Image (cartoon, rainbow over all chains, first blue to last red; front, side, top):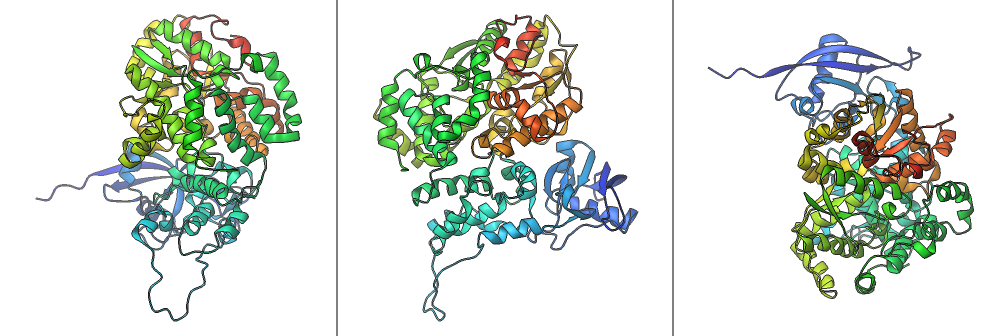
Length: 325
Length: 288
């Protein structure tokens, strides 16, 4: 006799909204029985097939390739066809809130308007730019080592999970966001591409580019394919310096200022770092500096902490530095 | 219990109360801390944006000094934690990189071996001392307080790295701080943004972004009746404590909410006084 299939009941609170008829979104509760091989997409299907045929969501390939079925489950970015329901139960228990990737961009239920995502994606020229012979005699070769250097950035499926999980995007609609920046990396570190400098100049403006990353790692967590966008953003930072495209601004001076400060004290001279990074802009920090001073939170030059064995640190900075500004 | 303490820069400068309260609480809990005075700044993820190799060498050196003592390295700042733990993870899993780093360290007579663990104080208290033991030492239960836990990104994400030392803390539903609050007799405030970002790392170059993120998190804590916030990260603490009025303006409301370091909250429950916990250094009055 075959083993009985294990099943569990889950309690869903599902975001519902139709922009043509509803003034406000609302949540509907459903109880669904799931079995161990089912994924979150099966849950969406059950809601549609068993409870309400008007329930809307995007889906296509069912194999984690088309990137259509990104949703949020208990605020966790989820590619519905790739996430086993039993794994989600292990993470959250059997109560789940199902929402679209972005509540403010919703059209109907799980379906959102991804125009902002695609506009930013297209802004970084997400394709190979190189002068190729139209009738080549041999293939345009890339060595295995060079391919490894892409660090899986090429397997992004454009689902938008990282983009809509990014808090910097949430509060600043100009920020390009993790997906398009990871795509920038994908071509900028491809040895065959020739538009690296052009792309670097596109992505290193303050207010919209790589320096607006808040380093929260939400994108790394949200990506269903292991692309790890923040790692790629970090390499774009270093590439900007390596290629001499870093403009002198508060962000680049901030990064470089750490080295200067560590070389002087081992520790950070917090006040000097802000002054060096901001230049004349340091004046806007005076009110908060005054508040901190009153509470004994500002180290003065004469009691600035210094690391023991500072000579070792200086020696290592001299011998191990690999970047210039 | 003996550990090597990596203080980080803020504990020696802008958050002196963090070092004070950590040392005072450790003493009461019977934890012996040796401060790594030789350590340098971890680069705070910004040096990493400029010179990756240099940041690996400097952090490997930091860990070397804990290895020399034969002790686990404890951090009291989430960002120190992620930078030291990232270095350890990369060197321990890449012999060639480790050799390149050790070649440099040899110049100053050091060698990175990989023999010391790198852990945040929060997880040492939970997994090595045990909350049960802390519970038995509580003198003044925090039963009057609704306390909003704020986890800070660099202790919970990326989970693949953090799970090495935080025993599977779920970044979407972290529990270690909530459980500690309950252990101390307080009531943990439930709110969505407890695992979100305060924006600290964009403070200078994207001040609006940082202020809005801080404002949104504090607003939600207030709307859920928090009496104060507690965080294991001094960078979150600085943004929340020093910049809360500016952050409030960005989200259109007045914000007045005390923000305590992890050790300050524990110290209150252990019956330590205001001075021992450095509460006079908190910018938003924390008069408990």
